Length: 101
Image (tube, rainbow, N blue to C red; front, side):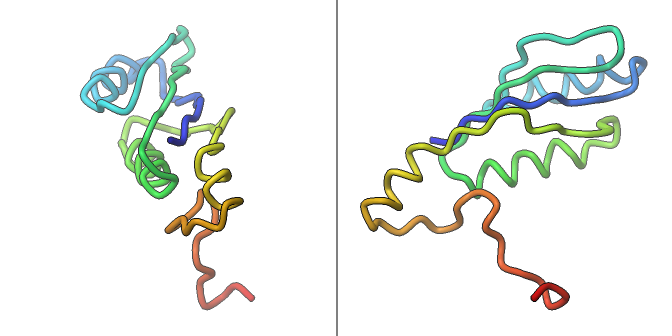
């Protein structure tokens, strides 16, 4: 089960709207925020693929300026990979686009 710590940045005037939207997402737990628009949260999903989708979802909020990944633990998936079990899409292992070698 991947767990990540993130800092979500918004304008100070938009922070309340971002906090409301995050409260509606079950996989997000907000731990704090400051007057500059920074929000500290922990994300917990069932797979790396879901983690990437969740970070993309948060990033697409029009009031979010940036989602900074500060911590990521995918130990469960790494252990499964070490045992030779298939992991559909480990975090960060997207297929290259046509422009990439």
